Image (cartoon, rainbow, N blue to C red; front, side, top):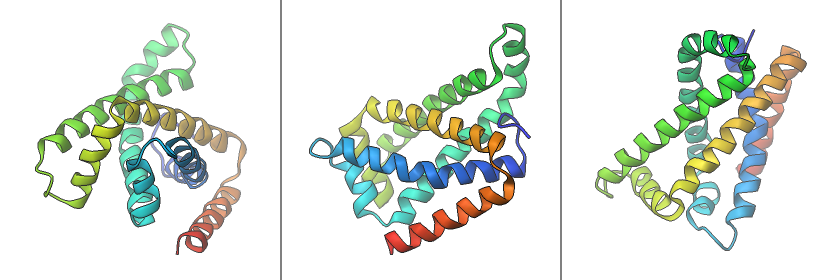
Length: 176
């Protein structure tokens, strides 16, 4: 099992890493945004937690799956130029993340603000945070990929499922 290629166990480890990393990332984002930015605080404190959490997971998982799909063409070049596979995969994922972020921003900004609450929120977020959003998404993606790789390498599957279960239960206790 490798992070670079799709498999259900890899996707499960991605979810497990997310269940830990989301807690850390939200704490960092809220700490950084305090007294500076209003929209990140709104996203993680005002909106229902399932909106932020599912949005973060679904969007970033689409990036992961795209990177896994494209990595089969990048991998031979990484091997040829002696670039470690994990580094090559992270670079590819970050490039894809920037492409997705730019397309997302252009699309959201082109829609009328009354299209949906989601669109209205992200129009305000993009205007407030600008390219800082893509930069923080890159940091987010790199950390999440590294944590997933560590879980795949060092954590048995049954322990990973336990971590996921405990994290989901903790989310229910804290957020409801």
